[in-house]
Image (tube, rainbow, N blue to C red; front, side, top):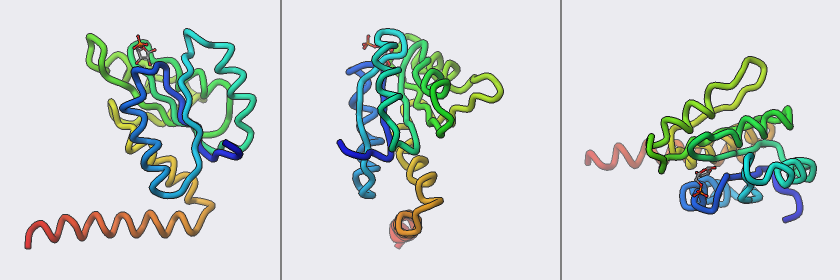
Length: 156
Ligand code: RP5
């Protein structure tokens, strides 16, 4: 991968099926993304190394379950925006990951989406990129219009 605009990180291979939804959205809109398994707890040195390499990345998406510290640690290593995806699958069904991801200290924001909300993490990353990309902004507007037309058509 040459110059990814988004890095999608997740704590475990078991997180891939959910986090893949973020990658799918970015691909659909033609945005280059890197997709890596990297745990804040199990592979901290690797996470630091990756973060040093991501010079082209404009937005980070980080998903983890249980004591979900990945997004927070990513946030601690960059001033670029970080979107956190709390993942279910634990005994607490993702409430643990939600609180661990969303309850960041002041000055250290993680924009947290719903439990297993990887698809919206992808869309939020697109919206951030679209602030300085008119073509992408138009694609998102077209998508929104199609969504509305789809709902209206269901009533016909
Ligand atoms: C977290 O622990 C991971 O993000 C994953 O959601 C959870 C369980 O990991 P595995 O035991 O499946 O590797 O760090």
